[in-house]
Length: 118
Image (cartoon, rainbow, N blue to C red; front, top):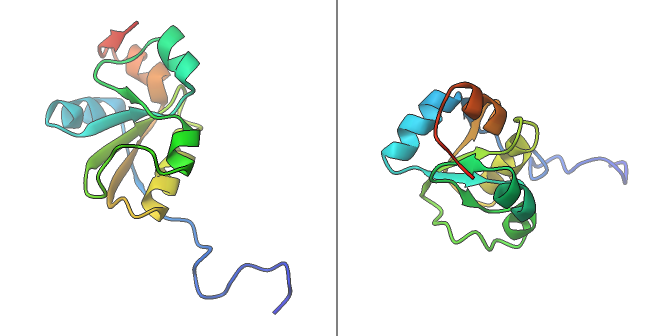
């Protein structure tokens, strides 16, 4: 095998996660799903965040210091929807079984008129 190629046993394959829109995410969060915001702590504090969201930046995810259970219903959101898919896939690859990406991020959340905390 070429020394720079990925393992052929599938170990390097990225985990797949579902994506939902912000209105579906809001409804699920009201039913108990954990909405996690993966922006930096500074962004979370200074730019506002979806009401009920918890800040869990990527460095905490990498170190598995999320405080989440592997079977929690987890909704992953960021500012625009570019960072959350990567972190959602990372969580799924770490063994979290119910991870969903929130399409459009906080920008779509605000545009939909959903509650934001400053």
